[in-house]
Each structure stands twice: as C-alpha cells, then as structure tokens.
Length: 92
Image (cartoon, rainbow, N blue to C red; front, side, top):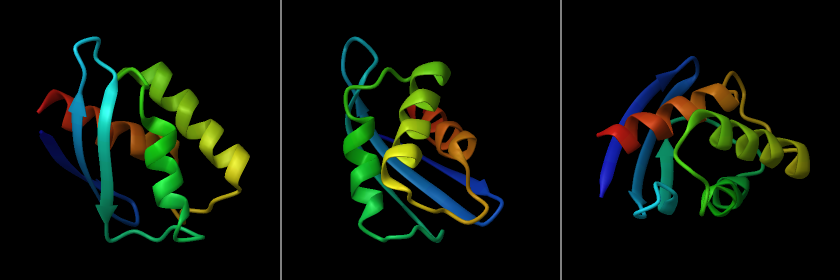
C-alpha cells in the first residue's frame, strides 16, 4: 500500500492507495483535516477515483467530474490539490 500526505491551503490531505498493474487506482482511502460538504461526498470521491489511471490528466478529469456531478464543496481545496496528493502517494 502506498501513502502520502499533502499540505493543501486549508488542511492536510492523506492518501492511501493501491495501484493495479496497469497503473490504475484499485483501492484508495482519503482522509485528513480538511472540510468537505456534504461529508458523505468523500466516499463518493473515493468511488469516482477507482479504476482511474494515476496520471495528471485522468485524475484531474475524474475529480472535476466529481465536483460537477455532486456539487460537493471543499473550501480552499481544489481538484489540483487532490491530484497532487494522489500522485505523491502513487510515487511513494
């Protein structure tokens, strides 16, 4: 299992993940001291990321789609912060 922490503008994003042989996310757990509204949206984000390639373009598209389809809010944390945290874990 891979792990990383990323200090975003409003909190720390902690990522635990497992990559499949084709470099896609087969397991991911997101946590930290950030705010997300509604709270259950975090679980939705994790499910959205399963099967996504661990590369900037694919992750960014998935996270942006998550925000557009759920209306979730993460004060001072944007798609780029999630992507950076996930990529740090993938490279660990």
